[in-house]
Length: 508
Image (cartoon, rainbow, N blue to C red):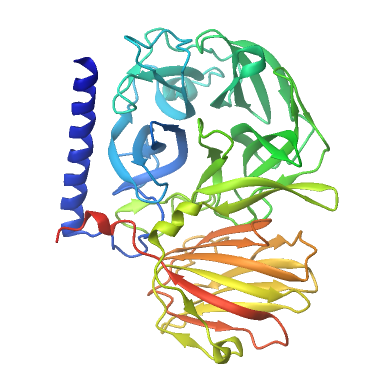
């Protein structure tokens, strides 16, 4: 009977969500200026870091830093959305609200299959969220211990959450930046491992039950980039040529390769206590200015799925959207590749994007030779094949003379995105700068995918070795495309229009 009640409750919530979205779509259709059509953004209000991402019973859960009181940052909640395909999302009621211990800052969620917490009842497997309680009063009074780690659990597959009565479970030892716990199960030692951001480094803790924690080690005090505070760490495994590597990612703000926020990562080994990198190189997961706080979904097996916040703390609170502010990147699958004895992460669009693809359009020889192509769809996937013996560029434009340029500079061996004339840029002096990404591949030909949406561009070059994410705010859609006329360069170009992920809610 309890299981039946849970099923009925979940069905009712999903049905409620569909009705709400249908009503929203009937009046708004998710088509406000700049509204992304193939990326998740909340119906309204402020959003930043993705949180608590977990896969359970054929459903991907996305929680996120959310302020339901307006489009500016405020007391943080955990918003909640679910998907069965990583593309279409249903926004559900808020999962976690601030309480007497503080705001609900970033964290993670796990499937406690062995019921190590004891939260499970009658055979029900609990989902457990581990998050930072941020006490604003403690911060205001100058205390150093105003951030602590707490738990919440769900027995109805993530629909509703109960906070643990003995929170916090990991108290702050006196570090002002003590937050963003990412937890994974370390099977060899049968224990949970927490990767925690602690000012300008990462601290590892372990626990048998998610309730009692022991400090294991620290990493990063003198390794990696240190242009800002370290935040939102993650640790996961990938295999290359039969060998298992541990990847430790850390988000940092400011100090990214193109200014402001960015995600760096380290490759090495983890023995349950200590992370040991294979070298001291600083690697960046995305070289564009607008991927931050990225972390992976838990409980997805060997498939490592990543999602970031598509904005930058340099101007996140100033971008010119009205009803909502900021969004998520596309979900990406991560893998490792060896380039001249240099191990690198590759980021590629998840295969589920095939669900919204429409009939492919091959771009003809005249456009490849420089003729302007008009009438482009508002969201699409652009596939390019280019000779890397020469520089090339692709200019996206509109009738208002706004333009966004993606290209490759042979002399510097860099890809770039230029949004200096992309439309509205005067809200922040740093927004109009050109961003650059090094080319790592040595191949003479590059296969490039560009995911183009209503106010974002994501570049996946050389099968994801060089990745760039940028937002823009044009006065009207970029419905024109021009490929540079330089010798060589782009030889093949195709456009794949994409269906809007919001159309499923429209009332017919």
